[in-house]
Length: 357
Figure (tube, one colour):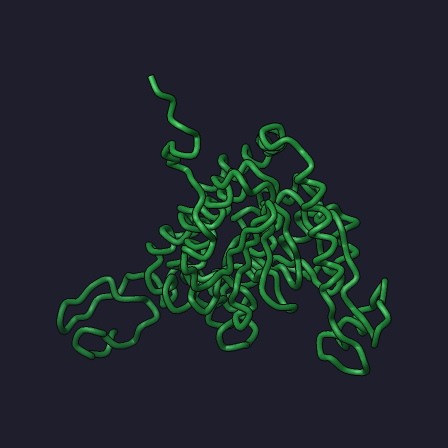
């Protein structure tokens, strides 16, 4: 029996060139044992669209199956944002109108997050700017995080009519402890880089502010703001971030691949346990919740750049009125045409135009 040369055997999981995918919302490159995945929506602060989630999961699967890849780097384009989670404008336009589709969207989000957890390879979050909402959940899903000094982390769920149960509610208590997790999730306040490092949310913080040719090793909020605006000689520079990420990747590559894969699998035990114990319930609850007033008001306020009317919903509840249905519970009927299940807050029949008594 003639042996088939290894080079001639079919490989069902053989690698594809990164450029073969033709991605629209992300950049994908593979070189020197490192796969780099970049959310390329800087005009939207690297918020992921529905299409971007599909592309991200595909890129991570490719990197996981490519035996030439030993390390994966996840980042965002530009200097302003690593990722700011889901595109709230897309939420307001699509998922508030058809909440059942949010269940489908969450299936794509789960596939993306689980593609990070299940790569079998170390994933480095290169935090080049703000990591907000699902952006922070993305970096929590990664194995290691390198953060630029001008960046910050933040959750926003309860301020926009949602819940950060795509990783934050599950993993923050494991990472920072119960009380700090509640502080992050309830208050939704920015966590600057130094605090993120002290709380164990990231592994390294790297200077990213310069004035002229001088690096500012411990930049103040004012210096960071000046660098972001490019005033008074200040500017952002991500070269040290890139150097540090590359150094960590190089050190990770100096390990046996299968031992690294199983080390990740074992170390993921608690993350996997709390994730799979809660995420299906979270997916169902969020899909139902998107039919209620909170996300309608929260998302619309974000789009309109105004403060949400938090007190209004509490006042309605205190009066015994509906805070679940945006226009009141479906309890009214039209005496003229017989239309039923009309919202309690409506004064006119939507079917025939008659006034409702």
